[in-house]
Image 1 (tube, rainbow, N blue to C red):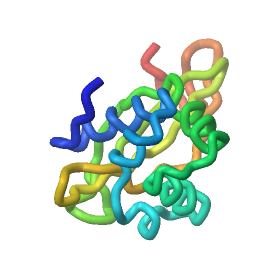
Image 2 (cartoon, rainbow, N blue to C red):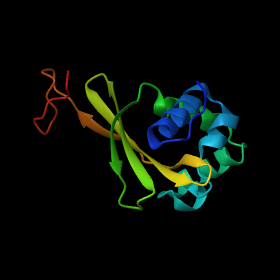
Image 3 (cartoon, helix red, strand yellow):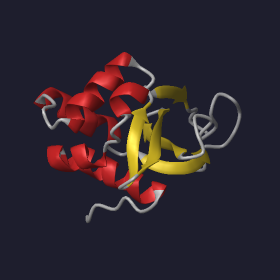
Image 4 (cartoon, rainbow, N blue to C red):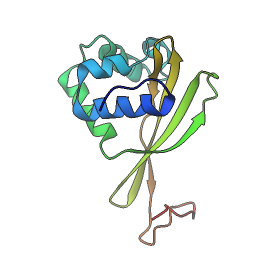
Length: 139
């Protein structure tokens, strides 16, 4: 996959692909300059700072690969943070639960880059394909 930062969707896919491949150089390129100060959680700021500097520990690269393994983009929304930020809803099904994350990208001078990653959220899915809130999972 060729890195693409021309639009928010392409940038999100570039980051996710780099994470799955544990490609430190591409992850650094796909990470926003402001990620180390704008990510919501301190642990995420520190991890993205190490990724941007290309000195993330192999355990961190493994954790990123696991975090995005099987994840699919299901929606893109404008972020309440800024007009130059987009939020992508990611989801994967794991046994009888949905695992959800949000991936935030921001427009920088050289293109769209990842600025934050939410912690995973889990939602139980019943055997009938109905989630706890009664909505369909789409299966």
